Length: 310
Figure 1 (cartoon, rainbow, N blue to C red):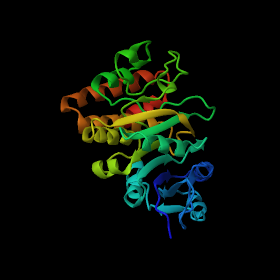
Figure 2: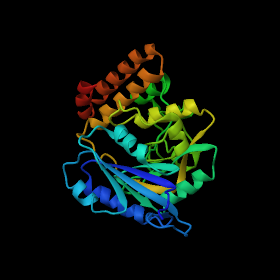
Figure 3: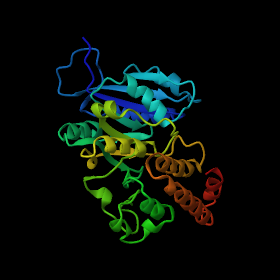
Figure 4: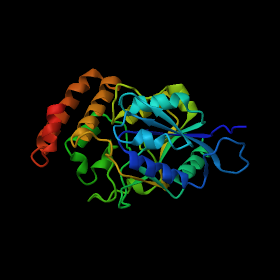
């Protein structure tokens, strides 16, 4: 008799064969998870299914992944983006909790089971994330507060880099402790508005009430918009950042070109304003982003290319 999963882990893969395999290997090392659902389990481990969606990779990802018998592999015929790929997996996921996990992550110290135990014990929260680390174990930013005209103005023009500025307004992208202001935002458990899709653990009931990602987003910004719809539907529910569970997030493994993350993030924020903010604000946000790219292009030529693509 098969065991029903309590947790469904969803991973999107695109030309990251070895990185994805390393991610899966680190998942298997989480001692709190049970991946063999073919028989009734009497252990205290969390019954877990893993769904990997390959977004039409051109490396040997599919050949390697289809030989792993404890994952369910979905093979897309084209790369239709992060949100759409996740939506396809979410529709067939059977767990009561969903974890969206980037392929370029490595699970440390049973971070997945730790996070699930925390979320199941805190009904006031609908979503949580682990502490993200860079490859050298320094802390990486993970989420922040919903974009508004003031914090996007500060973010795009670098004003939020000034001392004490982020204490005056809630930043769209808070700084890590390694920044010269030595912010402690990511050094303690706390509530925030949204978390990155690199590690996003949520309740099935939230997904069923809100629906999936907006598929107009290709990559970058879709988790902000999704989290905002969760907030609108359940304004009293909470989103939490946790420091005890930790993962390594390599970052940028699926970017098509160097300017891609910059353009996608600006486009994602602009799409958010078009959908959720007054129309008159869109004009100003466009000016902010164009000015940002122009000024930063004198230091980094990537922004010159980004400005052309916006």
